[in-house]
Amino acid sequence: MSCFRAENLSLHFGGLKAVDSVSFAVEKGEILSIIGPNGAGKSSIFNLISRLYEPTSGRLYFEDQDITGEPAYGIAKLGIARTFQNIELFENATVLSNLLVGRHRHSTTTLWQELLFLPNVRRDEKAHRRRVEQVIDFLDLAAHRDKLISGLPYGVRKVIELARALCTEPKLILLDEPSSGLNVEETDDMSFWIRDMKTELGITVLMVEHDMTLVNRVSDRVIALNYGRVLAMGAPAEVQAHPDVVAAYLGT
Image (cartoon, rainbow, N blue to C red; front, side, top):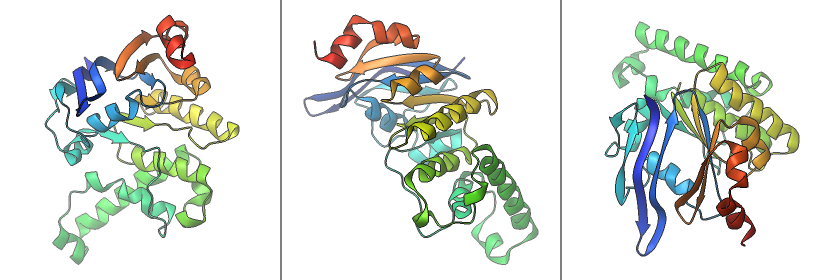
């Protein structure tokens, strides 16, 4: 059983076909990367999976469940998390507070229980903090735990964005340009964490990425897109050597 699959997925904006009859599957425990030139449809596919866009046609399945009609909050509850290329964190809150936001989908208490701070609320809060501390340790964020986001460099914020997604305990994580804006050393660290998400945490990864060094380092398979259509799919080296992929990147 695949973790996720898209069947004949299309997204049209008037006469523009941002995604054009795209089909693919992500196997459980796999790291699958989507590559392609700017405007190829990569982020549009993520927005369709996240339910930010409604598909023109086609179906989305997660663990064999049709999720095409699920609202965005329903997608999160199912166990799909996402990072964004443009980081959105609470600037005037600490790293710890930002990560606790990622635990919201696991909350089982009511507003009145929280206002009265009943014993079950205290138990939940301790459990949430334990999970957040595990993510902090996993991503080496202990030195930044109590710092405000506003005072942190971009590279650290990028890791915190990833940490918040991991705090939801996803089965599938969508990584949108995880190396964007990172230096070489930070990108190396990111590649280790992506692999460890698979091997240590058992998370399936679907990634959109321009950095082909990172793609080659972590990916089990690669999908190449151009003008919303699939050009090639397979092992990283095979896809990069495909004539249509070479032509799309070089414009020949």
